[in-house]
Image (cartoon, rainbow, N blue to C red; front, side, top):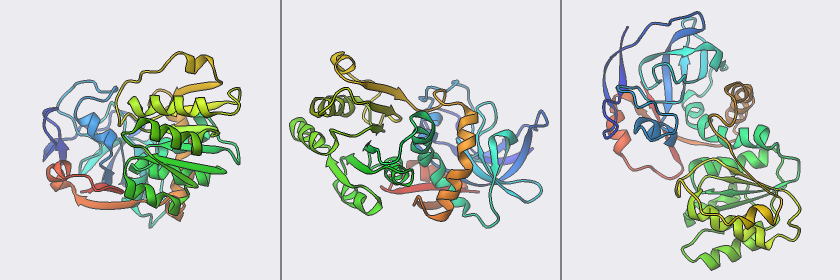
Length: 321
Protein backbone atom coordinates (compact mmCIF):
# COMPACT_ATOMS: atom_id res chain seq x y z
CA UNK A 1 0.00 0.00 0.00
CA UNK A 2 1.53 3.31 -1.07
CA UNK A 3 1.53 6.00 1.62
CA UNK A 4 3.67 8.98 2.61
CA UNK A 5 5.73 8.84 5.78
CA UNK A 6 8.57 10.39 7.74
CA UNK A 7 11.30 7.95 6.74
CA UNK A 8 14.64 7.52 8.52
CA UNK A 9 17.27 6.26 6.07
CA UNK A 10 20.26 7.18 8.23
CA UNK A 11 20.62 7.48 12.00
CA UNK A 12 22.70 10.61 11.41
CA UNK A 13 19.96 12.53 9.58
CA UNK A 14 16.40 13.60 10.39
CA UNK A 15 13.45 11.82 8.77
CA UNK A 16 12.33 12.92 5.32
CA UNK A 17 8.77 13.01 4.04
CA UNK A 18 8.62 10.60 1.13
CA UNK A 19 6.59 7.74 -0.38
CA UNK A 20 6.64 4.48 1.54
CA UNK A 21 5.26 1.02 0.91
CA UNK A 22 3.10 0.08 3.91
CA UNK A 23 3.01 -3.69 4.49
CA UNK A 24 -0.47 -5.18 4.78
CA UNK A 25 -1.74 -6.55 8.11
CA UNK A 26 -0.53 -10.10 8.68
CA UNK A 27 -3.12 -11.35 11.21
CA UNK A 28 -6.56 -10.61 12.62
CA UNK A 29 -5.19 -8.46 15.45
CA UNK A 30 -3.71 -5.94 13.03
CA UNK A 31 -5.54 -3.21 11.15
CA UNK A 32 -4.81 -0.18 8.98
CA UNK A 33 -5.76 3.22 10.41
CA UNK A 34 -5.62 6.74 9.02
CA UNK A 35 -3.15 8.60 11.24
CA UNK A 36 -4.48 11.88 12.65
CA UNK A 37 -1.78 13.02 15.07
CA UNK A 38 1.63 11.83 16.32
CA UNK A 39 3.68 13.43 19.09
CA UNK A 40 7.34 14.32 18.45
CA UNK A 41 8.52 13.13 21.87
CA UNK A 42 12.14 12.86 23.07
CA UNK A 43 11.65 9.08 23.02
CA UNK A 44 10.79 9.34 19.30
CA UNK A 45 14.03 11.21 18.64
CA UNK A 46 16.20 8.63 20.41
CA UNK A 47 14.49 5.84 18.51
CA UNK A 48 15.06 7.60 15.20
CA UNK A 49 18.74 8.12 16.04
CA UNK A 50 19.23 4.44 16.90
CA UNK A 51 20.35 5.37 20.43
CA UNK A 52 17.39 4.07 22.43
CA UNK A 53 17.96 0.79 24.26
CA UNK A 54 15.16 -0.85 22.26
CA UNK A 55 16.68 0.04 18.88
CA UNK A 56 17.26 -2.89 16.49
CA UNK A 57 19.55 -0.91 14.20
CA UNK A 58 17.40 -1.73 11.16
CA UNK A 59 16.82 0.86 8.44
CA UNK A 60 14.78 2.33 6.87
CA UNK A 61 12.29 2.98 9.62
CA UNK A 62 9.27 5.17 10.27
CA UNK A 63 9.52 6.68 13.78
CA UNK A 64 6.94 7.23 16.48
CA UNK A 65 5.85 5.49 19.67
CA UNK A 66 2.14 6.32 19.79
CA UNK A 67 -0.55 8.24 17.99
CA UNK A 68 -4.19 8.91 17.31
CA UNK A 69 -5.87 7.34 14.29
CA UNK A 70 -9.20 6.70 12.66
CA UNK A 71 -10.38 3.17 12.02
CA UNK A 72 -12.11 2.06 8.85
CA UNK A 73 -15.48 2.38 10.61
CA UNK A 74 -14.76 6.01 11.50
CA UNK A 75 -14.05 5.53 15.19
CA UNK A 76 -11.17 7.36 16.84
CA UNK A 77 -8.49 5.35 18.59
CA UNK A 78 -5.36 6.05 20.61
CA UNK A 79 -2.68 3.43 19.99
CA UNK A 80 0.73 2.45 21.24
CA UNK A 81 3.07 1.59 18.37
CA UNK A 82 4.33 -1.97 18.07
CA UNK A 83 8.09 -2.39 17.72
CA UNK A 84 7.52 -4.99 15.00
CA UNK A 85 5.32 -2.75 12.85
CA UNK A 86 5.82 0.43 10.83
CA UNK A 87 5.86 3.52 13.06
CA UNK A 88 2.97 5.99 13.14
CA UNK A 89 4.61 9.05 11.53
CA UNK A 90 2.79 8.40 8.28
CA UNK A 91 -0.48 9.13 6.54
CA UNK A 92 -1.61 5.59 7.34
CA UNK A 93 -0.12 2.83 9.46
CA UNK A 94 -0.78 -0.69 10.73
CA UNK A 95 -1.56 -1.04 14.42
CA UNK A 96 -2.04 -3.96 16.76
CA UNK A 97 -5.64 -3.40 17.85
CA UNK A 98 -4.87 -5.06 21.19
CA UNK A 99 -2.57 -2.10 21.95
CA UNK A 100 -5.21 0.55 21.40
CA UNK A 101 -8.18 2.10 23.16
CA UNK A 102 -11.23 3.88 21.74
CA UNK A 103 -11.52 7.64 22.10
CA UNK A 104 -14.74 9.62 22.50
CA UNK A 105 -16.19 11.36 19.47
CA UNK A 106 -14.90 14.90 19.31
CA UNK A 107 -11.75 14.15 21.30
CA UNK A 108 -8.93 16.67 20.87
CA UNK A 109 -6.59 14.40 18.92
CA UNK A 110 -3.68 16.86 18.94
CA UNK A 111 -3.85 17.34 22.71
CA UNK A 112 -4.03 13.60 23.32
CA UNK A 113 -1.11 12.88 20.97
CA UNK A 114 0.92 15.57 22.75
CA UNK A 115 0.17 14.55 26.32
CA UNK A 116 -0.18 10.79 26.56
CA UNK A 117 3.49 9.82 26.24
CA UNK A 118 5.01 12.39 28.62
CA UNK A 119 2.20 12.05 31.17
CA UNK A 120 2.19 8.26 31.04
CA UNK A 121 5.64 7.96 32.62
CA UNK A 122 4.69 9.53 35.95
CA UNK A 123 1.08 8.26 35.82
CA UNK A 124 2.16 4.62 35.56
CA UNK A 125 5.04 5.15 38.00
CA UNK A 126 2.71 6.46 40.71
CA UNK A 127 -0.17 4.12 39.94
CA UNK A 128 1.65 0.85 39.29
CA UNK A 129 5.42 0.98 39.89
CA UNK A 130 5.18 2.45 43.42
CA UNK A 131 1.50 3.21 44.06
CA UNK A 132 1.23 6.54 45.81
CA UNK A 133 -0.71 6.74 49.07
CA UNK A 134 -2.93 9.72 49.79
CA UNK A 135 -1.00 12.51 51.45
CA UNK A 136 2.49 11.28 50.56
CA UNK A 137 5.06 13.81 49.35
CA UNK A 138 6.80 13.69 46.00
CA UNK A 139 9.95 15.27 44.57
CA UNK A 140 10.05 15.73 40.79
CA UNK A 141 13.67 15.93 39.66
CA UNK A 142 13.63 17.60 36.25
CA UNK A 143 10.30 19.33 36.83
CA UNK A 144 11.00 22.07 34.30
CA UNK A 145 10.86 19.68 31.34
CA UNK A 146 7.60 18.82 29.58
CA UNK A 147 7.26 15.41 31.26
CA UNK A 148 8.36 16.89 34.59
CA UNK A 149 5.72 19.61 34.44
CA UNK A 150 3.08 16.96 33.80
CA UNK A 151 4.46 14.87 36.66
CA UNK A 152 3.77 17.76 39.05
CA UNK A 153 0.14 17.76 37.91
CA UNK A 154 -0.11 13.96 37.93
CA UNK A 155 1.21 13.69 41.48
CA UNK A 156 -1.36 16.19 42.72
CA UNK A 157 -4.19 14.50 40.81
CA UNK A 158 -3.25 11.17 42.36
CA UNK A 159 -3.38 12.49 45.91
CA UNK A 160 0.07 13.79 46.81
CA UNK A 161 -0.03 15.94 49.91
CA UNK A 162 3.07 17.90 48.93
CA UNK A 163 4.93 18.18 45.63
CA UNK A 164 8.42 19.65 45.26
CA UNK A 165 9.63 20.55 41.78
CA UNK A 166 13.36 20.77 41.06
CA UNK A 167 14.92 22.02 37.83
CA UNK A 168 17.34 24.42 36.19
CA UNK A 169 15.10 26.68 34.09
CA UNK A 170 14.27 29.50 36.50
CA UNK A 171 11.38 30.88 34.44
CA UNK A 172 9.66 27.50 34.22
CA UNK A 173 10.51 26.77 37.85
CA UNK A 174 8.67 29.90 38.96
CA UNK A 175 5.58 28.75 37.04
CA UNK A 176 5.35 25.37 38.82
CA UNK A 177 3.33 26.62 41.85
CA UNK A 178 0.62 27.58 39.39
CA UNK A 179 0.17 23.93 38.35
CA UNK A 180 0.40 22.33 41.77
CA UNK A 181 3.94 22.52 43.17
CA UNK A 182 4.07 23.34 46.87
CA UNK A 183 7.78 24.19 46.77
CA UNK A 184 10.57 24.49 44.20
CA UNK A 185 14.32 23.94 44.21
CA UNK A 186 16.70 25.51 41.71
CA UNK A 187 19.35 23.08 40.49
CA UNK A 188 22.45 25.24 40.10
CA UNK A 189 26.13 24.76 39.35
CA UNK A 190 26.87 25.37 43.03
CA UNK A 191 26.58 21.86 44.49
CA UNK A 192 26.52 23.06 48.11
CA UNK A 193 23.76 25.60 47.52
CA UNK A 194 21.68 23.03 45.65
CA UNK A 195 22.20 20.39 48.34
CA UNK A 196 21.13 22.84 51.04
CA UNK A 197 17.97 23.72 49.12
CA UNK A 198 17.11 20.07 48.54
CA UNK A 199 17.70 19.27 52.21
CA UNK A 200 15.37 22.08 53.22
CA UNK A 201 12.49 21.32 50.84
CA UNK A 202 12.75 17.61 50.06
CA UNK A 203 14.41 15.79 52.97
CA UNK A 204 11.17 14.12 54.02
CA UNK A 205 9.65 13.17 50.66
CA UNK A 206 8.29 9.65 50.21
CA UNK A 207 8.80 9.29 46.45
CA UNK A 208 11.04 10.79 43.79
CA UNK A 209 10.30 10.89 40.06
CA UNK A 210 13.67 11.35 38.35
CA UNK A 211 13.90 12.57 34.75
CA UNK A 212 17.55 13.66 35.00
CA UNK A 213 19.83 10.90 36.29
CA UNK A 214 23.56 11.62 35.89
CA UNK A 215 25.39 13.82 38.39
CA UNK A 216 22.32 15.86 39.47
CA UNK A 217 20.58 12.66 40.59
CA UNK A 218 23.61 11.32 42.43
CA UNK A 219 24.05 14.61 44.27
CA UNK A 220 20.34 14.84 45.04
CA UNK A 221 20.17 11.31 46.46
CA UNK A 222 22.93 12.05 48.94
CA UNK A 223 21.56 15.48 49.86
CA UNK A 224 18.13 14.07 50.64
CA UNK A 225 19.36 11.00 52.54
CA UNK A 226 21.79 12.96 54.69
CA UNK A 227 19.06 15.42 55.73
CA UNK A 228 16.42 12.79 56.47
CA UNK A 229 15.24 12.74 60.09
CA UNK A 230 14.44 9.03 60.01
CA UNK A 231 16.54 7.09 57.54
CA UNK A 232 14.50 3.98 58.28
CA UNK A 233 11.44 5.51 56.59
CA UNK A 234 11.15 4.35 52.99
CA UNK A 235 12.32 6.59 50.16
CA UNK A 236 11.32 5.24 46.75
CA UNK A 237 13.37 6.69 43.91
CA UNK A 238 11.84 6.03 40.47
CA UNK A 239 14.26 6.61 37.60
CA UNK A 240 12.52 7.48 34.31
CA UNK A 241 14.70 9.75 32.16
CA UNK A 242 18.38 10.49 31.69
CA UNK A 243 18.46 14.08 30.45
CA UNK A 244 21.61 14.82 32.51
CA UNK A 245 23.51 11.66 31.58
CA UNK A 246 23.15 7.89 31.19
CA UNK A 247 25.25 6.88 34.19
CA UNK A 248 25.49 7.75 37.86
CA UNK A 249 28.17 7.60 40.55
CA UNK A 250 26.61 6.63 43.87
CA UNK A 251 28.38 5.73 47.11
CA UNK A 252 27.40 2.29 48.38
CA UNK A 253 26.59 3.83 51.75
CA UNK A 254 23.44 5.31 50.18
CA UNK A 255 22.02 1.81 49.91
CA UNK A 256 23.21 0.61 53.32
CA UNK A 257 22.52 3.58 55.57
CA UNK A 258 18.89 4.22 54.66
CA UNK A 259 15.68 2.52 53.57
CA UNK A 260 16.37 3.63 50.03
CA UNK A 261 14.79 1.83 47.07
CA UNK A 262 16.02 2.60 43.58
CA UNK A 263 14.10 1.35 40.57
CA UNK A 264 13.16 2.37 37.04
CA UNK A 265 10.00 2.83 35.05
CA UNK A 266 9.92 2.28 31.29
CA UNK A 267 9.65 -0.32 28.55
CA UNK A 268 10.44 -3.64 30.18
CA UNK A 269 10.04 -2.47 33.78
CA UNK A 270 6.27 -2.43 33.35
CA UNK A 271 4.39 -4.76 31.02
CA UNK A 272 2.56 -3.52 27.94
CA UNK A 273 -0.66 -4.85 29.41
CA UNK A 274 -0.19 -2.75 32.55
CA UNK A 275 0.38 0.38 30.48
CA UNK A 276 -2.72 -0.33 28.41
CA UNK A 277 -4.86 -0.79 31.51
CA UNK A 278 -3.93 2.73 32.63
CA UNK A 279 -4.62 4.47 29.30
CA UNK A 280 -8.39 5.07 29.62
CA UNK A 281 -8.12 6.86 32.95
CA UNK A 282 -5.24 8.98 31.66
CA UNK A 283 -7.22 9.96 28.55
CA UNK A 284 -10.06 11.09 30.83
CA UNK A 285 -7.67 13.29 32.83
CA UNK A 286 -6.25 14.90 29.69
CA UNK A 287 -9.64 15.41 28.05
CA UNK A 288 -11.10 16.96 31.23
CA UNK A 289 -8.17 19.37 31.58
CA UNK A 290 -6.97 17.74 34.79
CA UNK A 291 -3.54 17.45 33.14
CA UNK A 292 -2.76 20.48 31.00
CA UNK A 293 -0.60 20.43 27.88
CA UNK A 294 0.42 22.97 25.27
CA UNK A 295 0.62 21.46 21.79
CA UNK A 296 1.80 22.80 18.46
CA UNK A 297 0.45 21.07 15.34
CA UNK A 298 2.84 20.86 12.37
CA UNK A 299 2.12 19.23 8.99
CA UNK A 300 3.76 15.82 8.63
CA UNK A 301 5.16 17.00 5.29
CA UNK A 302 7.28 19.49 7.26
CA UNK A 303 8.80 16.81 9.50
CA UNK A 304 12.40 17.58 8.49
CA UNK A 305 12.17 21.26 9.46
CA UNK A 306 10.18 20.41 12.62
CA UNK A 307 12.86 17.91 13.60
CA UNK A 308 15.63 20.50 13.24
CA UNK A 309 13.73 23.37 14.89
CA UNK A 310 14.74 24.23 18.47
CA UNK A 311 12.24 22.95 21.01
CA UNK A 312 10.07 25.57 22.69
CA UNK A 313 10.02 24.97 26.45
CA UNK A 314 6.61 23.75 27.58
CA UNK A 315 5.35 23.04 24.06
CA UNK A 316 5.05 19.56 22.53
CA UNK A 317 5.19 19.35 18.72
CA UNK A 318 2.55 17.13 17.12
CA UNK A 319 2.80 16.04 13.49
CA UNK A 320 -0.49 16.02 11.61
CA UNK A 321 -0.78 14.26 8.21
